[in-house]
Amino acid sequence: MGHMSISHIYRQFANAPDKVDITGAQMVLVMKLTGFCWNVYDGRLRQEDLADFQKERALLQLPSLMDFAGYVLFFPSLFAGPSFDFVDYRRWIETTMFEVPPGTDPKMAPRTRKQRKIPQSSTPATIKAVVGLIWIFLFLKFSAWYNTDLVIGNDYMRYGFLRRVWILEMLGFSTRMKYYGVWYLTEGACILTGLGYKGVDPKTGRVQWNRLENVNPWGIETAQNTRAYLENWNKNTNNWLRNYMYLRVTPKGKKPGFRASLATFATSAFWHGFYPGYYLSFVLAAFLQTVAKNFRRFVRPFFLTPDSQRPTEYKIYYDILSFLVTQAAFCFTTAPFVLLSLPSSLLIWSRVYFYTLIGTAASMAFFASPAKPWLIKQLNARNKAAKAGQQQEQPQKPLQQQQRQPPTLSRDSTFEDPIMGGGLPSDPSRELDSAVQEIKNEVDAMRQRGASVSMPMGQDMKAAVEDKLGRKL
Image (spheres, rainbow, N blue to C red):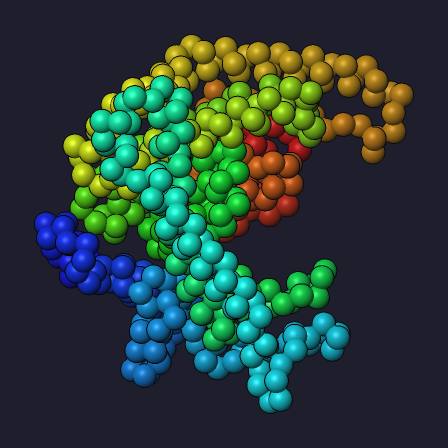
């Protein structure tokens, strides 16, 4: 990390785009080496004190120097990622990754050539390469139309406000194309080696090659909330930050919360370098996820039925507005990430009247005011009315046909996904899965700090999930 920081500082002061830049490779090495160190550390702890993801990655013995060098300098992902843990590399070189589970139908087994254990991967690798080249071609085209010179030039102010926001969105989109292209190419290279193998889909029987998938362009460009936006971007870096930062900085006996998220975003900014734009983007993103969490908990339920199982007729309008707000907020937030310098970042923010900063501050003030208890009161009143109606109909219905209890919110109800935070599942099953995952992450974090805790089971798990969701199951 120290040597990488020196390289970041040199790159920043040299400001020479025509020179060879090694910081990208160093950033990948930092992810690999820090993850490797934590895996070695976990291998020294008692197994009963480890979470499931720690047990899977813990190294009980140090690898040979050759294996370690092969892992660190794995060429297909050396310069731009994706990053992965040593356990995946070891399973790949030992070919245990490709073993077919006992009892598997031979027809479902992936095709291989002769005595090779690695399934044929040339077709998916080629598809990734072709799509990556298309993204790079589009980047070259769009970057000629939408670039930093346009948004900081005088001509930019000749457009109206909405047109300026649109140009800002297209600047972010054209910049993302570059990353889409590079990450598709490197993922294709990893697939060609076989390291991208993720087993066989039991439903379709198709081989899955998305073990090292780093980005989902469609998920980003159509995201309706911060969670969907962030969880589809730089996935392996998000996994690294979650497993080796977010869950490691939480004090013993404490739950991961806003401070852990802010520390994670700050680490991500430090990992990227020292340009002020990085810190403006990541710190604002931390506040955005808090705002999104509040809207998710206290506004979205008005657009669902009282049992939170079905959307109302007005839900489509909420979805459209959420999409527009999310995309507009992130094109503002990520602009400093593109412009990098403080004067340029503040200039472009001022040219669109700091709309995301104002909206974020107003939203936080709104939820810190009596408006939040009022929203809770209105939701609870609606839910109690629905519950009373259900109780009147209850004698006429069999027990198994009764609807579940409407949710009742408390003022301190919170729910937030690690790192991503603030998003909202699009269906109830995903909401339940997210609640269980959050409970698991909290237990893992406390175990890492030495606390003797166990995963709740049965009625205890049900009570914990109800506490997270703010309603009875």
